[in-house]
Image (tube, rainbow over the protein chains, first blue to last red):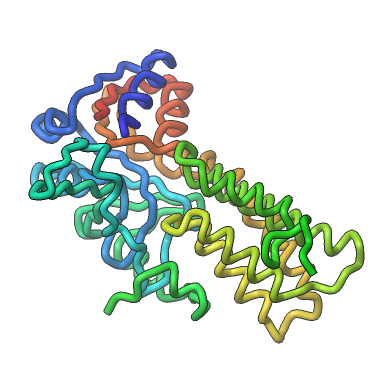
Amino acid sequence: MNEGIALSKYLARESIPTTVMTDASLFSNISNVDMVIVGSDAISKNGIINKIGTKVITQLASDYDIPVYVLSLIEKILPFPYDVKINQNKNPDEITNSTNSRLHISNYYFDTSPLNLISAIITQEGMFSSTELISYMKSLHLHPEMEQFLIRDK
Amino acid sequence: MYCMDSIGNIPKKYMIKINHIKNDHTNGAIYLTRKAIDIIGGYLQEISLHNKKLNKKKLRDILFEVTNAQPSMASIILFCNQLVILSESKHQANILESLINYCNITIKSLGHASENINQYAQVFIKHQCKIATYSSSSLVKNFLIFIKNKKIPVEVYCS
């Protein structure tokens, strides 16, 4: 939480002209930027897994023909057809500490941006288009006992 | 026999380091994957130094415990996955050596990751361009510093 604020403070200290805003404000102003650059927590055939809200940014950027670049370790690319488990509702107290049992609190950390919204995935071994990425994923192998940590997708 | 120096099948000194990874909610993938490699590489080096026989069951227990410490972190899952595959290889004359080599190769790859990514990504950057980023990534942070050091003026929008 507040990772963007920490990043903006760091960049400002490094004398890089930086503006920090709320997530909603960034979504609203996305048409004013020339490109979007984000990291990733993992990359699967379903897309880029990153902090929740990334999917909105990538979709909006695509709507405005703004390129989206993902900087990632090649080690984060998952073998085909696996995905990471991101659908875990986190500590509700991080949103509100309501005791009302009728209030459902949704606190998810990650979302998945489809690969067709991404202009390029840049790793230390080179750049991947979506098609190249799928071929690379198919060349990776997962040991059967490691399947417990991932989801096998169809 | 109950042994104070181990927890389950895993030596206590490794469990302490694994718990550090588990309780780290601040650092990113590069840092935590390096920590995971330090643990496993350290264990393998210790076997090599003392000319011991590789206990595949113990190695596997450590690998699964490390993976469990950050079960959503792709880079740790895939690193441990590769070691499990290598440990079962029937084509390697010296499995221990191949495991240590893989640890060294991965450490080297992580060490140069940011630098290489910067080189590839800089082709997309134009003077005075406005860049939006979201949340925080150490690779993105390093890249923006790299651009600044290249004296390419950019504006960054964060949230």
